[in-house]
Image (cartoon, rainbow over all chains, first blue to last red; front, side, top):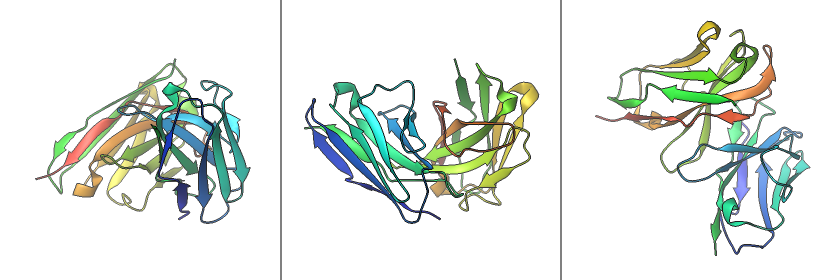
Length: 107
Length: 123
């Protein structure tokens, strides 16, 4: 099973700041990497697939990059509605596996 | 608009059984692969099971293999999860989730989620 490790666990950020979240895979996942956003009491929402393809629901301030084992989610200027937990997930090998999540909270 | 509505959750004793259902609408259900993903209270996400559009290909997480059975009824636009021999560690919100792949393939990620149904396994 591929283990996905996200860092940091929690990020305290002020609105307007640039945010970088990391996700590392224990073995190569090529570009088969998705990111999800989850707010309290809500289901997750697909944010990024294919490591860098942004879902149509999300604005351009969100971007994904990386391949093989190292991936990054960047929020260029954090807005109030972006405070949430972000999960990465690999879908290169079954079982598909998620990272433990990064919580982006208000500083 | 894609809608996925789960039902069937509740409180069950260890060793008991439960059947979850997911009613799909807003898209051609019979052409999409589907999944169940769960989230224990205050914890992260865990993939449970996947089924392709015709039901030909099915995968299970090791943690549920032999105890859970995924199925679908394309005529009723419904997805199911039969859960037997339930354990305390199966306590979670169970999400019905659509894979964007068509026709008996799996991409492996989720493009639409239901709101989830809570399963609590406790004596």
